[in-house]
Image (cartoon, rainbow, N blue to C red; front, side, top):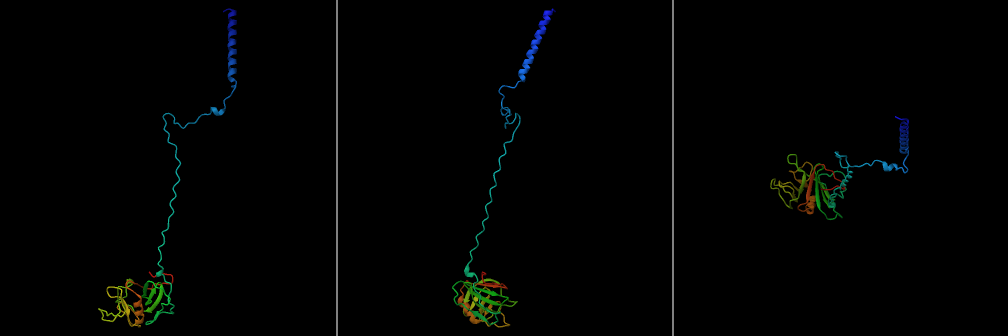
Length: 231
């Protein structure tokens, strides 16, 4: 090859080398208007990638409903006519043959009779006020006086027992088998065949105060006080 041709080749190669250097310098320079970094950030999407399955977003749990407040049941009304308002001022235990009566200033109202087999005492209340009390005769172990609540089912001023043939003045029947309130001699050492026997003057007052359906509560050793219910 001639020297001219070799020189031309070297010159052309030098030009190509210079052009490459210039291009590299241009690429190394920063852009005139650089793009803000936030515009270059990757956008996050909720769309699933092809072939993937995504669960729906979890829902916020609804607040639990408050339980309704419990409502207390209304208290049953109290019938004041059966609340004990007065006890007769009797000193010491009542002796056989002894009785007490005082109905002064006592208002009208329902009659309730109580009998305590342990104390051997009958009390009569009107409108919650004790108006009378007496020692009574009761049944024996062979023929005991029953306990329970007994309405008066029959009243007879003059009555004779159809079983024993004994007089039972001021009789007030409590049971079909003959248990009754009635008058009798109330003395130490005597007993009844299950009936509740009262001194005759006291039995007359009880008889005149009651009506059919009035209740007699016969209990054993039940203690009651003012403010308690008779029922």
